[in-house]
Length: 183
Image 1 (cartoon, rainbow, N blue to C red):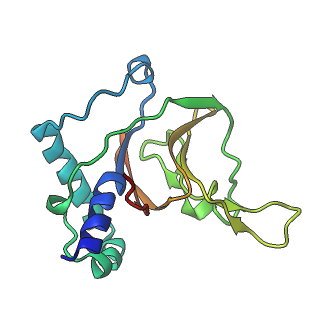
Image 2: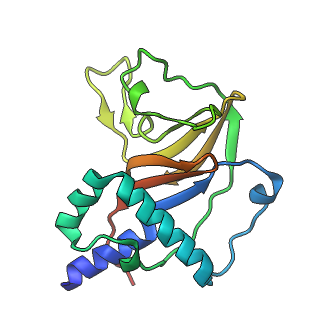
């Protein structure tokens, strides 16, 4: 693997897959990020979940494998562990069945709302002739209780491309982060 692919692969390892626990609780809201000390048991669970997600989206996996080579969780290296402060507010899902983005949302397996990974990226304002792409991306959970919760946000260096529910408590986001190495 050449150096360029190796660098991209390491970036992928850090930013590609985000497993989000979709439960709101005081313990998660007050959790403080700690030093990254990988627990082998947790890493193995994460690798299994990554492989499960990749297997469920073979088209996505094949696309990136043509650019990066072998594409299996065993080839990933954990390089970053991050969390954001929960941000929730009362707001019902504005994307209704007649909206073009409606089919691209991810309904909760137990009818507890829906996940939206695209509408923040696609800006469509009435004052514009056509939609444009916002440089930032976010993952929003419109819960069935009428609350909107931001689960993930990424600045202009990345894009969320796909998502899937692994179970009723975990949602996996697939995408990429493109950055330059800086000292």
